[in-house]
Image (cartoon, rainbow, N blue to C red; front, side):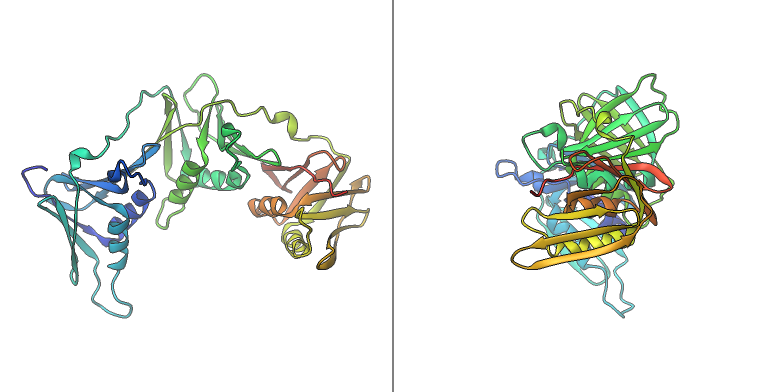
Length: 383
């Protein structure tokens, strides 16, 4: 410990946000119990909160008043729960808007106007160092665009351990665009996001792990975030460094090559139509109640309607019909209803485009007026 006793005061709201994020970056390790802690360091009226599980790490800064510097490590889960519990009493004017942190004998005293607690600490020198890396490529992206893009493709990430290169989001960076793609071989989601010039002469790509992508999307969607803020993303040494004001995240990347998926996305169709997204989502949701063990629902396209049906010998059968104006040939095809609902939830337009060729070839869905998000889904055979 430092000779001076650390002391810092800040708003409860800012401290709660930092502790909540840091807690999700900790890890459970019987041989390294300090990975369940976060490191608090006060320097020049700023509190820096660091947490890591050795796969990825986060460093957050909180502004406040700190007349004495120092650092100490405390249990992240307990500290986060404690700050959340100090939100004040409903209907009472006795708010706990300010929280004071003070280090005493290697422990932390946390005080508000109405409460105080002592958290047992661990030596700060035992806490792992924040990783460093040599930057080899970088680009900037709008925070809201990045959040929406990650959220759009995350459901298609593979959860299987047999193909580790599919257990994340492929990020392909060009001069003016970022392509985010994910697949579990049963469906594929690709989101295209416009970029300002990256400054890099060649395009490059990397695979962001699913858990890191999920955490980043969650952080960027927190209340009070500035949707117009630019996020800096830097690559190097099979790591990625993500920076914004008050936050640094560093994560390992998935090694390997993401499959070349361009040929999988159909660009010519034998059958096409437009469907109202909300009506289709409701029809698939109702039909799923009667789906068999294959989780299948069947689409039957005629010139004037699309019938969505399912049957289960133990339950019964279900049919619903939606009006359409079909282009091309009439067709019949079956899909996994969970994959369908994921795709329809990712899309946000009032109407969607649906295109297919036959009952064994991949089908394509996207918003009628915007094809920045493409969702490809493989049919299933039910006979």
